[in-house]
Amino acid sequence: LETDPEIFGYIPNPSYNICLKAVELDGFNIEYVSTIFQTEELCLKAIKANPWCIKYIKDQTDIYVLAAISENPKTIKYITETTPDIEMLAVKINGKAIKNIQNQTEELCSEAIKSDPKALKYIKNQTDKMCMEVIKLNPLYIKYVKQQTYELCALAVDLDPNAIEHIENPPFEICFAAISKDYKTMKHVKKQTLAFCQFAIVIDTRVCDYINNSITKSDCKKLIDDIKSFT
Image: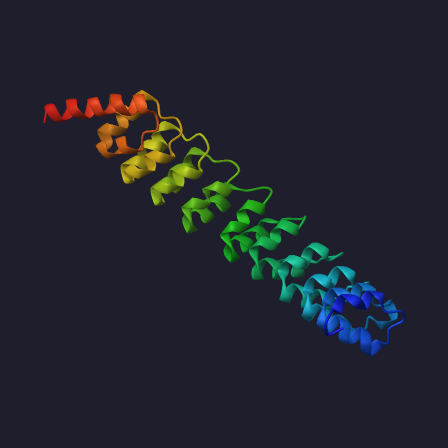
């Protein structure tokens, strides 16, 4: 067992002590432990070794569930019957545990976001309030927002112009706002029409270096020369 814990599954009628040793080495070995040997002592040792083994424990008592969640909140995925308290504990420890919770209440979602703003991507029914809280914490997380409203996009770009990279089909006003704060964000603008680029140059001539289309770039350089000739 010390050398290869996986051989436990091939041992016929192992004693309790052998079972205990096997789960200490690899928690998943509890899958091969008979129900009569799945004592509290053995189950807790298995969970300590590998909390994901909770899925192989026949009788998932509150003690076992709490032990597994405390070790790894994502194990809630394999808990047969959860309670609001268990779910709250899971998201407080790791916000991403919300992914495996069916009844995503507003309170649970709020705690998940506080624990880890990235948890927003796993929330099924996102509200503007949730999204705004996450964007204020990290504007780049606009990429996890399912309904990217004008207001949310404007907020994200105002806080960090690089957020424009993660906005799907941003309106020109949002693009101009980003370029006004950082001309280099021009590289993230996908729809670089000639008219748009000409307006962008008025904001900052350096955007010309980030224009993708060579013909458009050439036209814009001519425009820059014309602007310089008048100054």
